[in-house]
Length: 439
Ligand code: GDP
Ligand code: GDP
Image 1 (cartoon, rainbow, N blue to C red):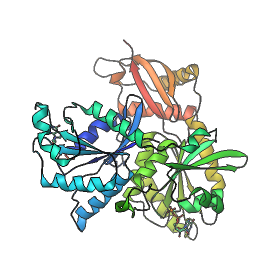
Image 2 (image 1 turned 180 degrees about the vertical axis):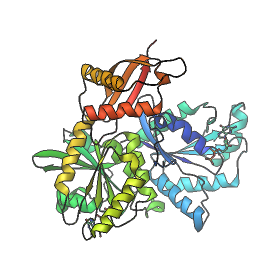
Image 3 (image 1 turned 30 degrees about the vertical axis):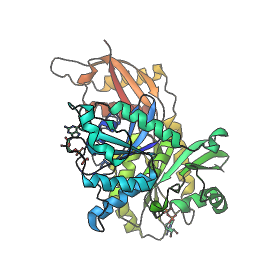
Image 4 (image 1 turned 180 degrees about the horizontal axis):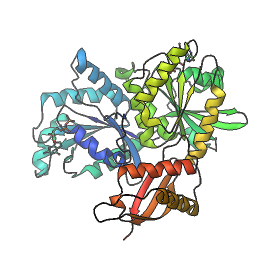
């Protein structure tokens, strides 16, 4: 499970600047696809070999009783409850404000480990930056500049070490054997996820696995179908973390992100009886960012007239057109209709995600693609692609080597992707093309 870092602090202290810095390298992996709206509050980051999730909680007004600020405070509370460690940002240029004290009180009640961090410290003396903030009683503050990057790396290492100490030992980790395809079932509340799990696995078994009060971060539900092994990744509900956080919403973005990143294949569930929402699109965006294989299940297909079905298909194609690589199935979890074909596509997506693509085969496909259509010159520069090898699986990464590959434009990259996809029948998985120019 990737540790979760929540960024908390009053507006304008530099949370989103820090968030962008932490998630930037990941950002580059997902081209801004048409139609893809991204949720800028949740992201993945990595220092060295250590991946993590980061939440930007936006502006926090703990005292607001209603309206948008109240809503934001609620979201901040949930983020804090789900975080392994909280990075509490304050503004070194402005100094301590009453608001910082209110947030301190709130964080103390949360029981989560908190790192006090003074931002905007570039060009200032350590002692004068931190002097003000000892008063908060949060210990020795770390000092960073989000804008310039000073101290950020050390901060993340400290945060991850702190998060790691928090982790309860996962008893399942020890006995983890090969359990076949790991599946994350995601979708907004009430689309029918639990119903589908019951249909796939059987109700009694779900209840047995879903015992409240356990401290485990995730539960895994193994099942078998047509002689094949699968495991449903389900991240357990919020661990109890003190009274303030008892009323946590049923749907959790963090939980969703964690199960996506643990899985091989994601089943994105949509509700045929509701419009496709921004939340659906955000969840789809997360799947793309992690590069997991994907199958779309449009649920509650029962009881709909054929004209309604046509309208839904159009709506989905329009709003989620960036998921063109994934197969879509119309199912009824409740009546157990359409499940067989859905599982078939899931197997296919898994196979595509782990396809073994040899260098000769890839290079041959590359040469074929170039023969059909050469990349355009950029001025006097002509990119020359020489060979391709596989750089990873789940998602498959195809690394192309050659000269002047920087001159290759995005549309040509998409053309190559399409060509590889068709040649190797890679249905249901994203595919990444990396261009490497030799010296
Ligand atoms: P948020 O509201 O907490 O998300 O704050 P933002 O990230 O939007 O930053 C608020 C303002 O502070 C922006 O104008 C940033 O450019 C500026 N800022 C953020 N980090 C730094 C920093 O390290 N040094 C300085 N001098 N300014 C910063
Ligand atoms: P979750 O929040 O995503 O786990 O959704 P649930 O599985 O709890 O389902 C929410 C509601 O939708 C329940 O009342 C289900 O009975 C209903 N539901 C689930 N699947 C179907 C379906 O295929 N058809 C219809 N008509 N209702 C369904």
